Length: 191
Ligand SMILES: [Cu+2]
Image (cartoon, rainbow, N blue to C red; front, side, top):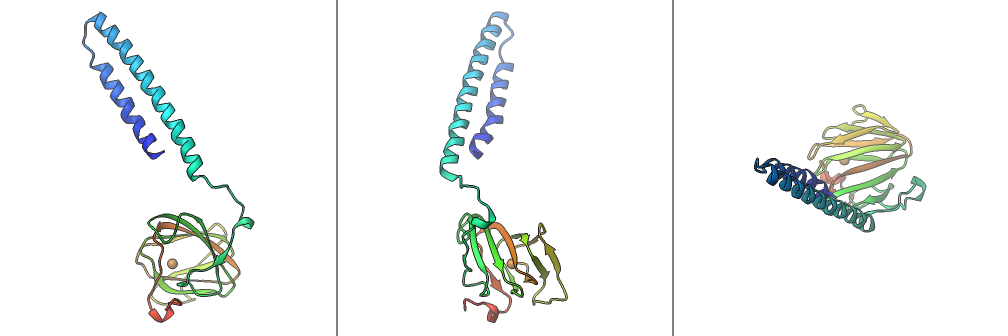
């Protein structure tokens, strides 16, 4: 679809320029205008066909069934997360380049020590009480509590930490690959 939408203004601009630069002779101008109109129409039809084909191709290849929260299949968190939470991949593959959307379901009292990511982390709170703070060590006196509908981002390489005070679900999206680097290597559960 990106290619198709990018093509529209270029095509339209090209047709307009061709029609405007026809010579002044009335007969030739008329023929030229008619020819140009036909060209424009056929290129528009081709463009529409291209867009329709492109759209149905995208639907067949990429579209996932919409789903409700209760239908999400939860699994264990990747090893670099503290144990006790659950994880679900909604879109993409967080281990690879490209857009990913994941969810993290945490029990009350769950903590993620200070860390950073290679790309910006975008967090949307689905439910619960998600506390996030910026800094090199987890400090529960310094943080912002986000509730359902809240949103926060941690820019790439910026140290931050999080904890929850009730069962909480957050959705995280960003550009993969998703990874966690802990400020204190001893905090990394995968080591
Ligand atoms: Cu983070």
